[in-house]
Image (cartoon, rainbow, N blue to C red; front, side, top):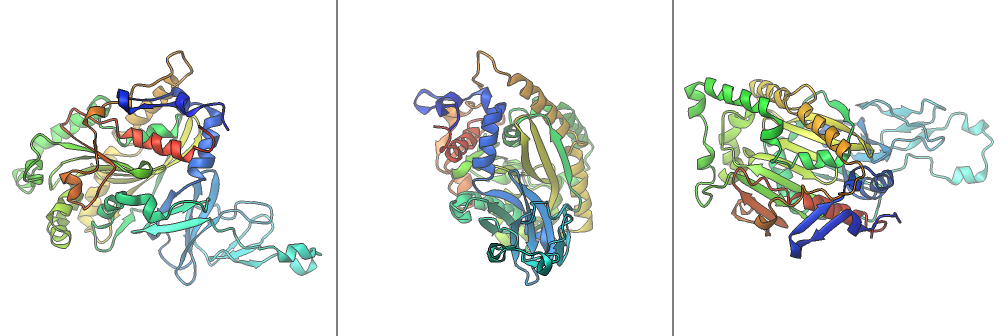
Length: 447
């Protein structure tokens, strides 16, 4: 148990229109360690895409909380997930981020394991004078307790006592479908990843991906560039776009977007963008409509920022980015990011996608540096003080409705809550889903 009570951290009084978070949630070392154990190591987390280990004996490495893991495709083509630690002395077995290998040899004492995690050799075992108990132990790599795949997205848990992956993803599966359905062949990561750290709490990135309120304040230089480019567009490009006013066709006057909140802490914020040549997916617009229908095609062209709690974010706006959050400390977070793309797209569309991606994302883009500086300045403001409660989780409170709406109905999806809005509402009430899920996973130690 922690010294904190839940009511000291989350002030949730819907009858009074109140939802507040205490600054301690972002700075306390004890809470951080409990988060790692109960949130990142105690439930489902995203570990990667199936295409990252596409062929027999391919592998990639990552972390579940503080625990290093290997995702490996064995010789029969089955994906598996193991703790990346030799059972002999606990040395990390594989140091590379990805590769292909039939055998993995521990760099310390040369114990050897195949791509299915089975121990194939213990150096000089017959001369080792081991006791009988040693021979009775399992010397294979330790498999994670739960490992599952949905539409090429891989999730794992160190805790066996979790809901099924299907139940955990719930209605948010429809939004992963939109990513996977851009191509009949699914999606892949464009080669190359970016890894960087910022000196602030992981929940700041969690919130920011879903935060529409900051955009015009934090990214004015990017907005000015977009405005300049719009003036320079040729007439044929403008004519090749189906505007947002035609997007919903009826019943959406004044609606520019909204939010959806789901069980288990998953959220989406979205904006109606229209089917536009400004998107690298435009070359597929007719094919997608024929394959999926116009409503789903139109949703694919929406601006969508999806978070699968606690560590996966997919941003479909200027381009398409996959982000994976890895907390390192209460005031230090590692981000890994990739450009995610439909398989089989043309070379021209891929080039366009990458240029758009470089524009906006990564530490060298026009948005990420703005955001991470704000995170670090916010972390400074999380210092203990008399006024401990933050006020950034109540905007949109009275606009929130239970269940779905006509826009979620287009996907056959029923969220727990929804908000529809004009451009200036900028719902912050969806953040509440993060902290309700946080409280559920931390229930054993924060009451």
